[in-house]
Length: 310
Length: 199
Image (cartoon, rainbow over all chains, first blue to last red):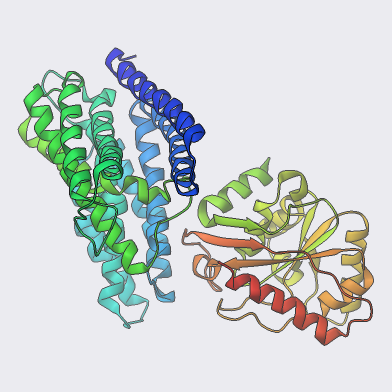
């Protein structure tokens, strides 16, 4: 068992413990209905975090297979939420069945057998073309390009991008054992901490919205404070990575920025569909896609930067 | 064991939000729902607490569920379906068998439209529900609205597309003494339609 991995997980559990205590104290102190509601939502989120951390810790500790299975399942649940909100047609049924029951397993199988060449082009090239061909065979040309593009986008976001997270375990970095999953944990901790920190800074100090047409809750204060803190956190976690502290800070900054962009893009999709959340699976958070939206853009970016530089 | 696995799988593929207007009880009940997919009853059944699930039998068409070994196995061993003949001359006998089921303390899942629709409108109810209520006046009726299953597994498809659904269990209703058939059926159908529109 990797000692640094245990330290990381232990650290996350410690942070959660503190949050749980703080949440209970706030619950006692809440006086107005509005603050009670905010605190109830906060505590629901913390409870869901315990469950998420438990699942993730078990997956990490079972090595590569555990992480691959977990992220394959996340892709499945995320794509399911994405398709639910997409205006698909009856003729798309078979193409969608293929997406769920063939594309997802094959993409994660490629991670498992470490076939990087095919892994990186399967969805953007072959599935991209096959989907269009399969859809045209169904014979319905109404909104054709829009329907193909929607499914393609769903697969890119929910499957291709997400599969880069467990693929971090395959990276060949000199003098560093990527197979322990510490890079994956580094990515997930920085992305999720950046989310939580942006939310907290925004709640405490935010008043200038960044993109009022998309998400009124995202403010400049939250963005700058959260991203800065996530960068510092990444630098402080340099010891689990093959990077020097300044490099870890730089990568954490890019992860946080990509995370912000991913979250904003997914918010725009939700807004267009007229919903607040993609799902209801995680009480307080919404759906799986609401929780991993910031991971979507960050995972491939972090993977490739690490691969090219180290 | 297999039942729990099937219920888990049904929810992984087609699960979503579920709402209960009243707490589920063990009283013999007739859950009646709108029908668009073969998964309808599986999902409804999967949301029942396990101990009630074991005592709730879907009413299903013999011509479909008796047509292959696999279907027979699921209908008989997993769901304990009550198979009835559709549109045959023995409608009376089917109602009697359903009533008998209720009298032993089992509950039923019924699709009073009689066949699967496209998901837009609830078709007029067949008369079976009314005759069943007359034969078993003690049974509680529970309307259940099921949304989005027509997209998950529409008519004519073998494999589902996993999506998030919504299932709403409504408040119980009963047949009034002397209530005419058409009025009752319209009222029951209305209860289902109201349920579909609730937020």
